[in-house]
Image (tube, rainbow, N blue to C red; front, side, top):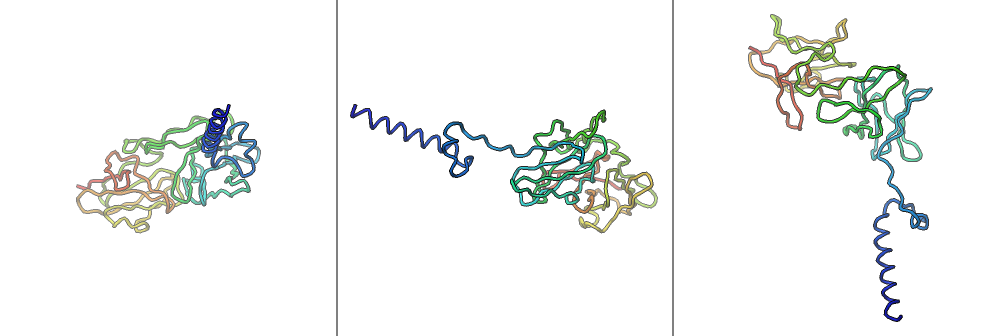
Length: 249
């Protein structure tokens, strides 16, 4: 009996060390008794996005000093719809949306795009990731997946660059409040070449360029870089993405 007693104490100490290590960070101070009965579950990173009478309530529960909502409903603007931090640490925004299906993401700290893992649906974002999808109302048509980068498709009213007598006609067909053209031909200046919105909703600019090959992108709403989805010619950029390429003969 004398030799068994220290062994039992040692086993109890090892269990205590092991269990405490498994629960560290998940149990609030003073809750050790409850945690001993059953290990606490870690909270989900995000969740709670629901459609109600007042609109769609988007909820983010992950880390971040600021959170905003970007999606098809606001032209993927990274600052138009900021979420408000709540007492429990979550971030929320209730937004009125017309019936339909909308792709969206959370933008954390202005630069980190995060999908909502609790969304019931998702669609390819065209860059190897996923956009979350929220459904408002019944009978809405499925959200169309974004085309893969470099796929030659007519994106909305967009089309590939066309060489005309006046210069190269660039066309952007996505939703936007403003669009500019930046590329190797203008030193990637953000506001040097602004596109004008046309009656059909597209954005265009005609630019004179000397013969050669040029990399470019559209800058939407001053914050979001977009390749030309209607142009199949692309080249890898220094940031793990792609630039569109136009060749002037």
